[in-house]
Amino acid sequence: MIKENSKEKMEQKAEKLIETKEKLVKLQYVNDVFLDNYEFLKVMNISKRTAQKWRDEGTISFSQIGAKIYYRFSDIHDLIDKNTKKSK
Image (cartoon, rainbow, N blue to C red; front, side):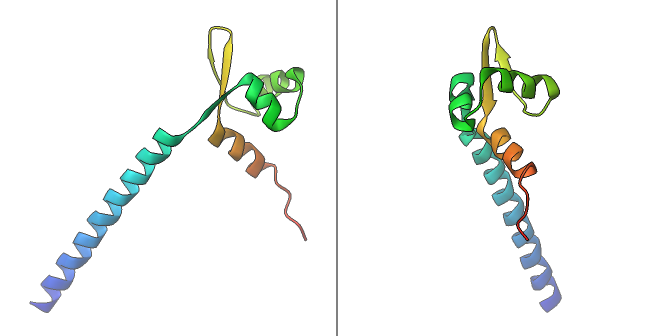
């Protein structure tokens, strides 16, 4: 009897964790902000040529619709994180 209640409670908690994780993933997707190329250049303080080089090399992910280029803020954040040098 005690083991069954304990097992049920653990299963309920596991289900609740899965639901919470799914909600967080959806929120992250909904709240992901896109910057156009102009905003990206300003944020990163780089030239158009540098942005083009990064796109060509695959350094930064981007989306292109016609002539307009967009970057996900989370991709910019990942780029910075991947290139962070830890202090000693």
